[in-house]
Length: 193
Ligand code: HEM
Ligand code: HEM
Image (cartoon, rainbow, N blue to C red; front, side):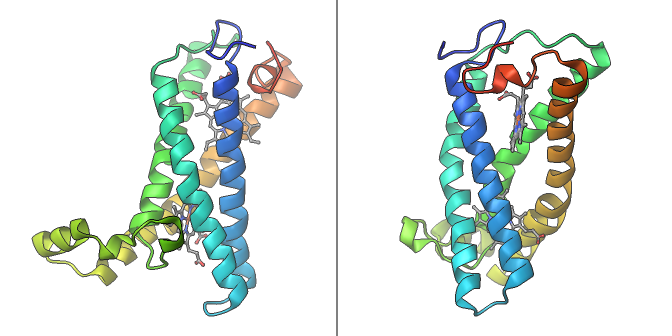
């Protein structure tokens, strides 16, 4: 199987990155909702779930960087048959997914007091960059954290990202079961269109 994308199919590296990132997103969602629904602050289970969330969020950033680079340096396979509006919607939703892939780890990191020292990552509130920003725009860590936490959890994580992922997965299943046009196959390991 080719490493790079071809006209008929995604290459093996794109497939690997797509499913690895999807796996990390599932871990991120499960750990965040486990912490929120089944635990409260101070419980050991809460700490563990949030640490799993933060670890998967930080680890996935590395794969996302590689993925953005690989996307920018690779052409895409020819899109499956469809109207210009469908092609436009697919392009728009894929680009928006890329924006979310970058925004989720960044807003998560910028908006939490939970430390990630065990990963060698300094809490943003303890960095010189934050000290400089705080002095420049006259803010405190508490105000800053609340704003980014709100964007990460309330706007993106619990609403917009859900909507986008449901549309994305719904479209993949629609192509697979209704159109039967090989759209899902060409993203599956070993699959071709
Ligand atoms: C793939 C990346 C990530 C995704 C998809 C993601 C998604 C989410 C979601 C869905 C929630 C729950 C939203 C709600 O309140 O309903 C959440 C909460 C949270 N996220 Fe993330 N996140 C990611 C990365 C990160 C990173 C890198 C950090 C920190 C370094 C982080 C820190 C947090 C914290 C502290 C919470 C609150 C957990 C709690 O209330 O117990 N996230 N995230
Ligand atoms: C069960 C979950 C998922 C399924 C079934 C799925 C399915 C697919 C399929 C079939 C394609 C190819 C579309 C085409 O040929 O036009 C695709 C592309 C894509 N998917 Fe997913 N996907 C899933 C999860 C995710 C997640 C969690 C993300 C990101 C957070 C994501 C981001 C993307 C992006 C950005 C593309 C465009 C191709 C690229 O440039 O890499 N997908 N997906």
